[in-house]
Amino acid sequence: MLGGMQDWEMRVSGLIDHAARAHPTREIVTHWADGTQSRTNWHDLRCDALRMVQALRRLDIYPEDRVATLAMNHARHLASWFGITGAGCVLHTINPRLFDDQLDYIVNHARDRVLIYDVAFHPIVERMRHRWPTIEHYICFDDPHHAVTFADWIAVEDGDALWNPGDERGPCMLCYTSGTTGDPKGVLYSHRSNVLHTLSMLQPACLAIEPRSCVLPIVPMFHANNWGLPWACAATGAKMVYSQVADAAVLCDLISAEKVTHVGGVPTVWFSMFEHMEGTGRPMPTFEMALSGGSAVPASVVERLMRGGIRVVQAWGMTETSPIATVTYEPPEWDAMTFDEQVACKSRQGRAVYGSEVRAVSLFDPFSEAPRDGDTPGALQVRGAWTVKRYFEAEEDTVGSDRWFDTGDVAAISAEGVVRLTDRTKDLIKSGGEWISSVDLENAAVAHPDVLEAAAIAVAHPRWDERPLLVVVRRPGGAVSVEALLVFLADRVARWWLPDAIEFVEALPHTGTGKISKKDLRLQFRDYRLPE
Ligand code: ADP
Image (cartoon, rainbow, N blue to C red; front, top):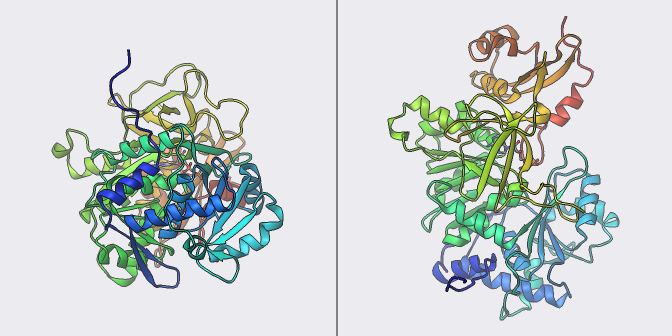
């Protein structure tokens, strides 16, 4: 016997239908690269998306064809998310900071037929187009000189169209992992996985996005489903604020002027905001929630945000998990905790959200679960309603019959289910058969007032196998010495974890999403010799 209720397809077009009906005048604001601003709203954005559905059909682009974007954050890009998926096509967001060989690989692997791009990335298009034979149509979001513009392309349509109907398990969006090992892999989200991920994000214990929210995603739209923020904002008719530029002064101005409540960014975003405030003497802009993900947020950053009256919500996940799998929501005992305990709580990666399950398996025996004692590190695995099963075009599933997906992260899970990420498997430093967490070392180092950024990497050692090298960027005006930093660290980490060497550098290499690139750093220091 089945239940007596309606089947209601969970497709992302339903999200913007809701926004346009229930919250038609809620705004989407864009700060453009040239400093101008424009405003649209959910009603008009839906009309643009429907026009785009017609324009794609006119080009003979069919459901399940891949349509790519190469663009920063703005309202036209947002309209294209709903237009592409509403036509039943697959939205492929390309990270413009990938290397040419990766750009070549992913466009050809995805067999993208259309590319819509920001004029700022015209040099990439010029350089790559002879390597992208599958792309038949180039459309420019913002400039008439190089290709037909998005506005002109959709202007001839009347928007009197219907979304493409289809199975909710049909393909919706394609995001490639950065490919730190081997070729990038495509994660093909379904409409259903994205809608379920959205419903989870809206919960008060998760991101608490609601109609009165005003969300500024600083995380780029090409990164990991943009953390699901476009879908979540449509689902509630929240106001959105986008900036094509990631300059801290512009972002702080926008937060104040538009009364932003939620800001989503990787930890480097908070660092650059702090730097801006120190450089200018301006106070921290007020907003309700800092959503931090992508890499571990140091306790010193959590503390500073919390002292500014901001609720910090750290989320852990990856492209393969849509991306949100765990969140640092406040536990029932929150109010009884001291401030320091609250900071420590927010500095961990939190508990699984409903719809995602996590476990850590022993680093020595993949068939047994690591003890849930909050201390023993294990290989972190996840499964759930928005976790990858099979990479795009792969011949077999990436998970076994029990569906556990190996994240490549290392974590200790407590008896209460709180996840504390200690490293990525390949970043762990193996010293004399024991593991040193590069993340813990880095967090301890950035707690020093003179340290802006720090990264710990393994360097080969004849006796211990590997030993840590700490590479540090000092704050402007900071003068901390190697000896002083070692004394500072000695109070915070086990003695045998202390780095064998500390090197000061002007800057650390970062990935396209603003994370420290350990891969590049290891390359930079590949011939490094530790002092005797
Ligand atoms: P990329 O591989 O390009 O960095 P992802 O966003 O998929 O793209 O990266 C996911 C990885 O980022 C995770 O496996 C984890 O190592 C790291 N990560 C994400 N969120 C957090 C977090 N809150 N704390 C620590 N590490 C995180």
